[in-house]
Image 1 (cartoon, rainbow, N blue to C red):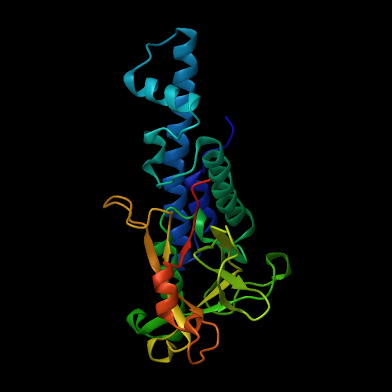
Image 2: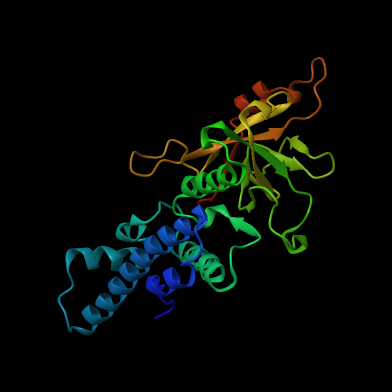
Length: 270
């Protein structure tokens, strides 16, 4: 089998003395991925046996077979997390997701977290707030986020963030990030998406949250922003720096970017 299912018992033993909220997130995530991996493995093994004539091909297996021929992800495989990717990209993406947690188990929490790799990103973000609330002895409700866009590449980040976490995996839709002046900028002609640099999600006191000079950019899990009741797409709003404000200069206002429909995405449809 192409990827081993996580041994939950071993992982629980290894992290037995870790009482941090992030450990809970890790265990919940690998439990969900185990369900997906087991489902994919069973479908493929049953399909092989069905093709050989050893078992009857059921209606569900027929759906899997048709999807494989059309490079689509079988609906039953999407139960863990929703994705718009075709099968080949979805499989590559799944392997990367599994790798993130396998490395976390083997070497400890990553220095830079790939938010797109979580089946439930909000759970991870809440765990970061809980960790900060416990460390500072404050109620979790009193905390908000400061979003510090990092100028460092992932390879250059040698230590975890002092507060919160470094997070990667964002794509900007309807804008790009100006790497010289470090603020939002219009996208290049014909540019649908632009990669966003790593962001340090830093928990701070709600009262210290700055709104002026920032665009409150909604972040979604996948390109269909409305999502569904079972698979909501919205994650949170990330405040990104606006270009300097000047009379008649619309780009320096939030309204300009709202009308553009500017948003952050955690995954694309390709």
